[in-house]
Length: 305
Picture 1 (tube, rainbow, N blue to C red):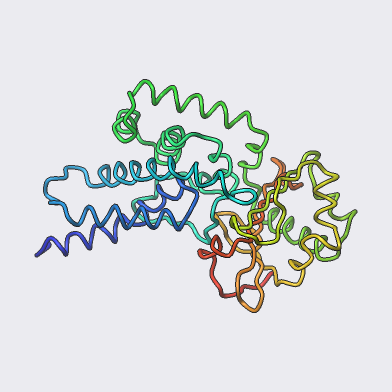
Picture 2: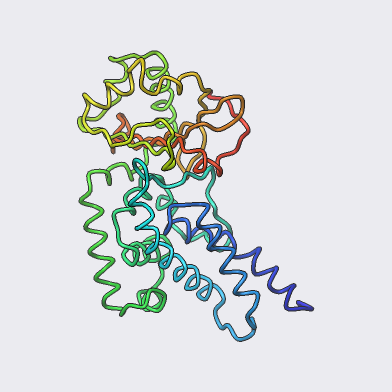
């Protein structure tokens, strides 16, 4: 029994904050923006009479969704002036809790978030709410301000579109041990500028995308596709050479084991790899080096082996 409105609100915040964050993060691809949306949502909730809200979980989901839609609409114009490629912000752990138990964890993977960047704000909201959280179309319609039938059509269209994307192949996760071995093989080949070793790791049409945070951080400004170009970048004695001086470790990033690079304990880069369906080769490289995008990766180092 709660004695005060404040006590009840505190309990609701502790119970639902991970759930609210996970929705916002999947919609925005930015942990920093997701946290801002989360705080704004609960600040508004704190001012309301809680007894007047029938379904608090649905209310929070709708509130988060509306705020995310507004932010996504404004983010489009901001990204037009972004220097280089924009990638989602990596997080070092799954932001799950009791209220998020039903969500699909593969919808948090970095490759999945990259695919979602191709969608419009409403398409992304409908797809995330249905695919990751299994909301009924009637509930989704109320959250995004569209008709139920329209939401069904949007979800079906987006599902087909994403499945047709070449990058969709990386959404089939390789077994944990196979992925770890692949990361170790890549690290060895990358450190040694090993052309033949690196070539054996690449699919026929790999892609490498780097994000320097939109600032003048020295990185690769345009996506590189194809074996020849990606191989040249990853085995060059000039490009990404500073990265070889940093200490790599294998850690969970967005639910998948990825490479985190640190210098004297400070996170300098995160490299997320998308593997082929067999798990035997690397299809995509997502390199994040912008300092402001690395805030949700812990400073503490962890061993590679």
